[in-house]
Image 1: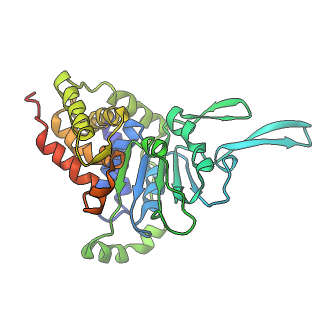
Image 2: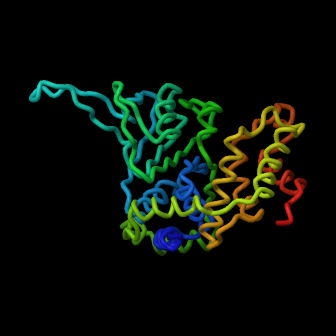
Length: 308
């Protein structure tokens, strides 16, 4: 089933110029069922990447544009009164999809942001006391605008921790942007064919869980997280969710690479996307220009790698 994931990535590559690393990371997120915080400047292709990925996997795609006046019911749905039937019925919101792009998440106030917590953590929503499961696979991709601008509400640490991965979407280089111009009409037509089905992706998710993670590799994962927690520059470090997603992410990467076991290099390759957004620096080190990514890379250099 790992060939199914490769087919999805290959199909999306037809309209995405460059960014092969980004597509691999999205595939990791899909197989491990981890939600993604997409960060980058406006116009870097985040929406089209999410939409193309959903179409290639044969899933339903929904986009939610966050605004300061958006209500939780606009995301999860609400109960409405049907006058013809003389009864109340549930109207489902856009969260009921396989891939949900939440655009400019931090433009919505905390009350509205919190509507995503149950969906992201438990893959279900509750409306008027009725709990309903979400489609599987289920993946939330959220973007942010720079905090501090007009009408922005910073994400709480609880909300940020619900995102398994943080992926930076950069601008293309010169050659890639020239190629983008050459292919723009083809890209606008979104000529992406479904090369898989949600059922096949769900099977791949189940298969990835069979990949073995040895005791030394598990201890390596925990040692990386513990190293960051004890760093002088950090106000508070990664939660146990960081260890969990290092475990799940490296297992999914090993599966994509055709292995039945995880090696330390798999852990290293997912470390930045799992750990960097879970670190809060002390103010004095922020002023000095220290970044979470630098601390993650230092931990990778200093923590002893297991032999096997």
